[in-house]
Length: 115
Image (tube, rainbow, N blue to C red; front, side, top):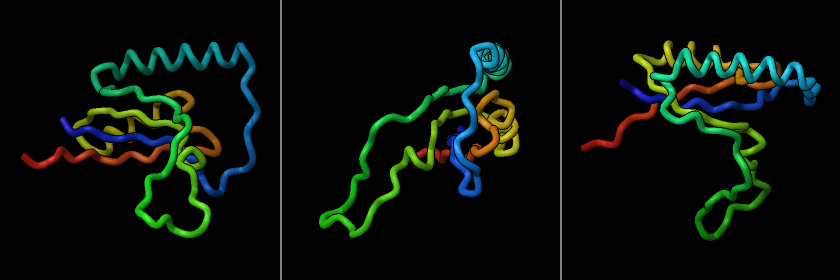
């Protein structure tokens, strides 16, 4: 079955940071997430996670100007298997907390290396 990379991304037209959920809201979100994870356990290849510190590897000499940090664009990732792109989008869209105001998920098919 094909694999798909799901990148949680900030949307450029998003308003400022949203309010932090209350402890009760977080508990409800985790319960929904666990239900989603059980529903799609056969599709989840790598649940991924949030991204931490990193650096951009560039050719010598380094290009001029500031480089956009990945963590400013991508909040996290996961890899799912699905029969096609539409199914992968459906799985990602149903993940609680992944698609929300100010962010969305870019779903990209991963092609296996030849050979």
